[in-house]
Image (cartoon, rainbow, N blue to C red; front, side):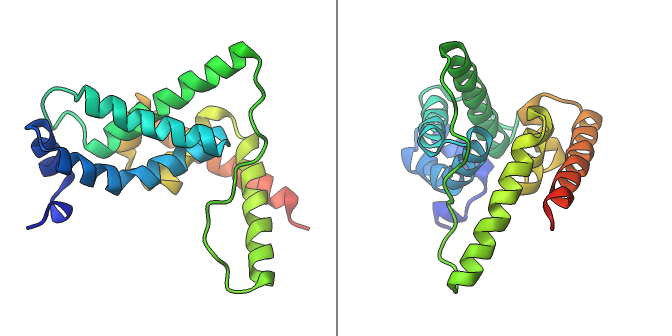
Length: 184
């Protein structure tokens, strides 16, 4: 079986035994998703790429001991989240102003009308997400956009399952309200 068919756990084990190709498969498997999460979190494409690269580099340079503590997916999202939070805090201290909108990472649309409609919907969603409190936005992005399980979201954020459920429910309600207010 090729490395790209192996489980994350098997690839992590091989990587920790010295297999750089195993880590490369993990990188390929998760880089785009981590970048997307950080992009939505920071709203800055260049910063998101830098943070995603840093997260993978940090894990590669200093792998956590053992396996089974947390799945690789939880680990990489945790490291990326912490990197993003630290970077945003640095920017606030420096007085930098984050970009108001994220670049659209989506692919080609079938027609100009469909592309315009998709852009408009994406902008409305981005605006509504931006209005959410950071803790609720983060939970929504991890669970609904990135598809992490509740357990993985708990691992990434360090919150209890009940806290994650509450913030997700509250975030979804606020998001619905914000989107309903923008529909004409």
